[in-house]
Length: 279
Image (cartoon, rainbow, N blue to C red):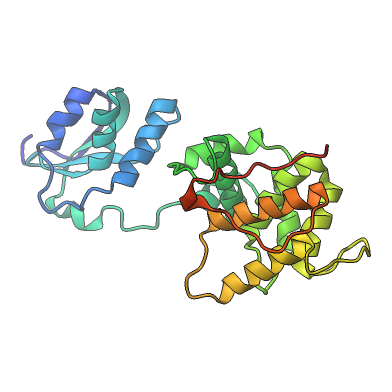
């Protein structure tokens, strides 16, 4: 590339071999690689959800140095799948300082652009549903914005569950809104909305919405006490552990059992619980 050439862009098919070659021109002071970003891009590329014509460019300076696009190129090399990318040539040598200076769009941002209400909470809820469908909430899954958008039509009624969770937010710290929405959706799917809401409201409020008596050994009350203790504990349970306890309490509730305590022995090899349906 000649120094007197002006900046120009090409929409190009980039093969894994090209990607590996271009990476040899990577700027030494370029930002460190983030494996999670590469894996996220690679997941979209393998699934066919990658969008290469979104306006983002791979950038080369006038002397041929790569100043932006290393994560995309690493993902192409990793997957072995060619992708079409917009490539900018002859950008100014100082371009690196201005690359990616803006805020990255999160799940809530892309859902809001798509016209969804309560978009941040909806995105968090969909991420739980995607994890569950991909092998369980205890399994690490790399979730992308494209996966979130693709998941929305697969879970009809999830927006209603998000609205319910929004209307029943609690300051007591016993159930995060995204987990409340996730549980509302899953329990409603298993046993119907009425039964799901009766259980969740007894957990949130500490009293039965139907007027039935609750006891210290009632699963929702045991769970409520456990989560409130966790909210002030120094070593807090992870959200996956919290969901596991919620499901175990629900299962005891559906079986009509009284319980003294709730525990998920993850480290002892106990399987992640599945949501019980009516007998």
